[in-house]
Image 1 (cartoon, rainbow, N blue to C red):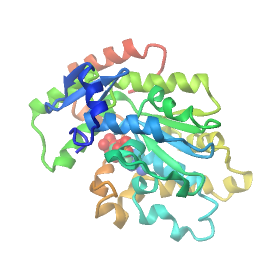
Image 2 (cartoon, protein in one colour):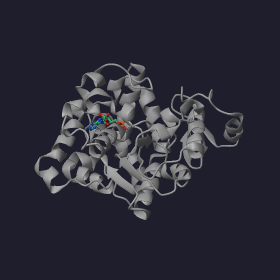
Image 3 (cartoon, rainbow, N blue to C red):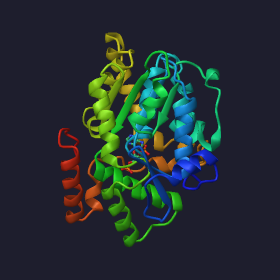
Length: 322
Ligand code: A3P
């Protein structure tokens, strides 16, 4: 129901009336607030996060675009941060019995959705939250904290993110949408008109943030985690101030985490094969192929060229692969 406007206050309705608007590929209205596109209910939730969310300095916020590697990042960070707790009894690890999205709640999609204002003091510390909000918008909330909390961003190449989003939609609606819809969705992506888009503004906000504040903002790439998982997980642990000790490395702690969080392992767990997550989505739709370059099976060479040129122009100073 996030595309609708049934949770929007009168104040937000007035704001929305003043914003640039467009339509997504299905015809739902999107509104541009401070450079980012939102559906009405999403904007309300984002405004509520900005107003009410006050992270503790021990909290960790995971950020991503939808289909950018959110589920993997959630599992990896959870496993890294809580590794000591489950060292003795690995069979009791929460990732074996709960979907990663139920262990790491979304701020605007779950906690602050539907005009809720949760009491976060009841959550244990450190608490891991996640969001799809871009960094400038998130900063409106995080600067209220007494000291900065850690933010980890995962970025994935635009073509695979797009294709993953296409499959996700098909799984969500349990039908395969037609070619015309695929092309409409592609055009919207290229114009940047999609929820939380444009893609490049999102990526740039965290890229710049990570350069300006290395201590508190980590920029990771999905493709790099695939390519050099050990190095990237160690980098993650160091950033989170819980580096792997020499002893842990020797006894294979990094490998264990990688195995636990692997697509193959998570997607074969009973909890992720059946049932729904707390926000009511089929648990299995977060797991598919997890490959780099799957876009080649779906985009025409012309489509790939179009999107490459856009990215080349928008992200000239960064080396975002794919
Ligand atoms: P594909 O559709 O390309 O397979 P998000 O988690 O942001 O919703 O992104 C979903 C994408 O991440 C999907 O990509 C999914 O298969 C992949 N993914 C999910 N869990 C993963 C894991 N544990 N390791 C690697 N990739 C994973």
